[in-house]
Image (tube, rainbow, N blue to C red; front, side, top):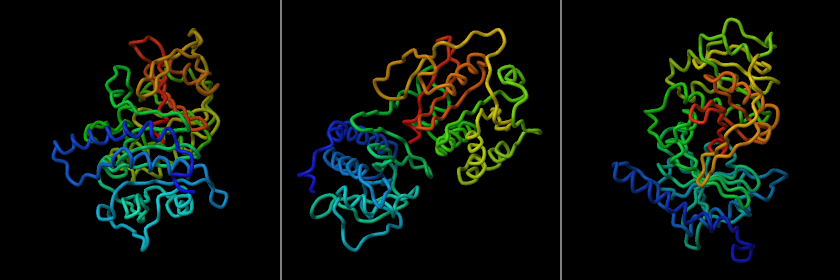
Length: 375
């Protein structure tokens, strides 16, 4: 079935002018800064066609599997070490579904460019230029628009489309007074040179604990303090003694390079799959896992939190913590209300990810929904 015969994906037409404007503005800014080797700028019609084909491909199955594809708009001349096909393939849901098993591994992109008969698939690449338009099929009906930031393995999420729902990431969210450092790094709009080392490792932990799909909680407490124990049932099921310091040591020695921290990050994130919470200091010293959170003696039960999401037109709302995902979120919110110098990260089994911090401005717990930045 050709694109003219199948039903159009309405969200593709709705979002394409916004995405074109975004990429055009950032490209102009990069040119003014003297940035070299920039990706080509797709027009709105090109963006619409790529999004439409990817959406319908996401709803198909190939040998029982849903496709997971990353599409990058660039010519083979602009790619690094391209794998080029002898014959160009038309950009269609059927083609994308059939070739998806070849490019489902992280870091591999299908190259999309203009051919004699319209947009086509020319091959694959692992290397793309700065500001390259990338569209990832994350799940059936779930698409993520992002671009390469210029740093190794660093992408910036621009928008998330899930069915008829469109979420455009708010670039100004990092300037909000209650914005946590983790959110600032995830947004990726600041120069990587300005990142706080520990926050960069925390980003990797957040991504990894969400990826295992079991759900989990991570409590980050100030190093050298003991007051956090007043909010944990004693004894901790799996207390660690002495503290496990491999991640702390590696973060200092490797300057936070992902490839160096990867195995240790994965091991620590895996502990969040155990019932209970992982307790980690802000120096990345592991104190225990399987910890059960309890209300601190003399402190009130948490009843409401402020909920925000770093997307355009988002309005803060007051909700009961259980509305965010159940008892795991309720206990994390209670912990932050009682331990206001701590941070709690909570991953749900369905992929939602929330960071809880105490907000002095609001005098209450603030819940930041960050899953749009982790897809």
